[in-house]
Length: 155
Image (cartoon, rainbow, N blue to C red; front, top):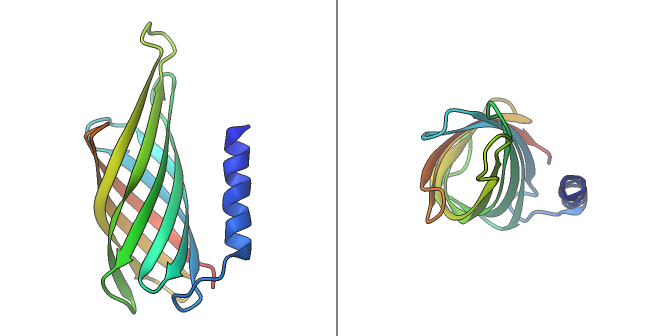
């Protein structure tokens, strides 16, 4: 039920938001992988610009371990250093990660973390782009995350 509410909230924000950075907000579909845990994640991200060069970025990731399941939720702030075709940014924010084990008495791990990283938006066309990102999740997971995504520039 919580998953559906999150998806509905992201959809609601993406339809009714008016950004001040050239009127832009974005949708991103990405694949994520942690350096220390070799399983992939399917990531869904929305990006909203309340101020010039500054955006708020909520994202939800489904990871695919061999047994059990793992999920991550992040809400980050990005500050863009450049514009035009190659848009480089730095990011900081909050991350929550939950790993549920099936056949283990541990049950589950919950981690809160501070996200620090950098990335870019590389435009392919006026509507599509490529989004590489490297993010370190400190104080909880202590893990380096690598993300590669496709960006859809909504407006």
